[in-house]
Figure 1: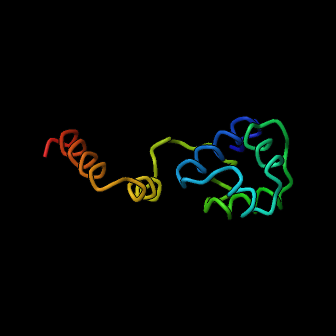
Figure 2 (figure 1 turned 30 degrees about the horizontal axis):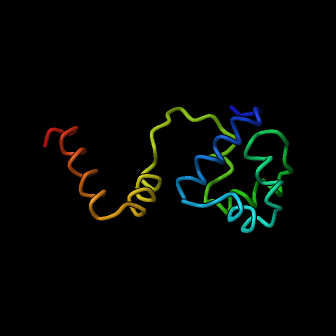
Figure 3 (figure 1 turned 180 degrees about the horizontal axis):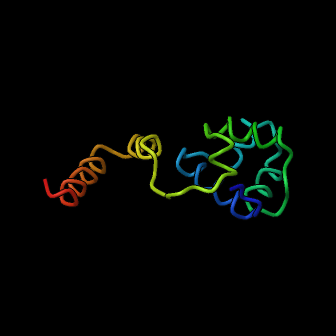
Amino acid sequence: MLIRDFREIGNRLYKARKIKGLTQAEVAEKAKLSDRTYADIERGTVNMRVETALRICEALSITPNDLFCEKKSEVPTKEEIQDLLERCSEEERKTVFQVMEIILHK
């Protein structure tokens, strides 16, 4: 099922951008958009052309399906988890690992 709610699409862009550790300006530059245009798209206050959506997806390393299709589950992908872990300090990764061990009872 396709998502037609601009705010939901904007929320997905926001989440993808945060996972990548990028600013709105950085995504806008990569997607060849003005900062204002990207900010408006991410807020869900404007629609975008297909070409624009594809450039944003490329800038964020996501697929159009990630942006426009309903997901059965909001479980993060291995890539999303890896992206987050790569931005952690060594101490933070150690803590994450310890929490995972507790959750998994190992």
